[in-house]
Length: 230
Length: 362
Image (cartoon, rainbow over all chains, first blue to last red; front, top):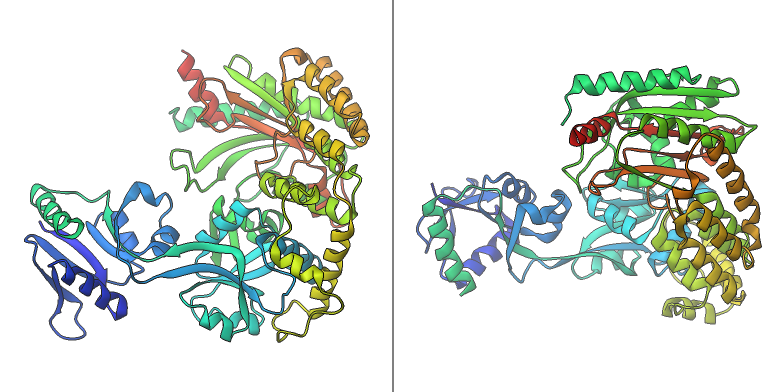
């Protein structure tokens, strides 16, 4: 069997991953038609390229169906509890930087810290009869972060896209979302909490601890390691 | 691990003992509406309970414990006083601790009684201790009511006391608040800037969302008032910290806390209640001189206990959860009672763990 490398199947993340490996002497490419998710690797014998949605890569690594994978720290930590036991971080790739942050309306001039947020959540609940709603798709990460910080009386509402708009639409009071420059936040009249950085994420090469490694796969892994870690 | 049929058999025996003590058997549904649990525990419960849903009833949780449905049932239709017992599965997600069981049997005993809280506390503790006799366990006890009385008695603003009360069960946030109110931690820059300005401040950014400008203005007023309030007195703060650190056998703990009450006189009635409870425990044959008391016990268990709390732990197996635990939850009956309330105390046993320890002994 061959050593399977999972890579995001489209977009900038795929291109940058291809570039990153190319600089280290490994040619990744898509094969077949534009719409077909098949790929090839040249440079290390015994490897196979698997093109996947970035969001599925953590699960595939944890299940041991691929040996290696490129995906963001945010997705790994959101989808895999006790991720350190299932995955090993081989190498951060230096792109795909994104921060998972907490943001509130700019007009909340009395709110700058998690302590402020907690106090506001308590009075908001008293006044409005429901918990303060935070729109996000990163439920586990945000919940664990707020539990750790001792923030109470909030509620997570699911938002899979256009999260910043939920405040204006009054389906949430604030958001927890990925940002790289903060422009979308500002455009939607939101601001960061000064201590509300939940996670700093970037594209990372992971190794599955649960996958089976046959002798030729070990060999391929060693050859790859020599190439990329030098 | 003990097999399921012997666990069920032990559970049945335990429940019969509670029936013999006067309890009525109840059998709440496995599926509980998620809303009530979320209102009570907040989002944190999602890390512990299994959530499922359908289009008509909405989100439901596999019951993470029995206390909540039993309280709801009692507040709806119960006569007073009442004693209940139950036996059945509870479900807990164990994502951070996969070695722990996510489905296990609990057998419980709950007392709803107005007249003699100390007697009811002692009754529950002694009955549970009796079921566990012979097992190599260590009992821990505490009393959240003493800590609550200490906070209520602080010489500070009602707003600060309410904030501290709200976080008694979140020790880290409690600590941060205490440091802030004592003037030990610096005021954050943004807060200083906000407080250095005067008058109405809203309007600089466009109004957005459901939280109104009036709410923001009201909070700024509160913050200004808080900045003007004096810090917590040093002697009160030290006394509160000494209280939270009390960890002794019951007689010595009482002695230490009586000393602390010199600086925190508000805890005296709560200490008197502890005295009465100790007497009631003694009367039921509990060896008080070797019983542990920790003033901070029960603060991190994410429960609703607000008075007497206890747990039984396997002395040689610190990796195991408590074999039995319980406590008083008067405030919960108020919260779920829609205007009525009744003092209540209860506890649960884990027959699976009891059998495991028994097997380990032989």
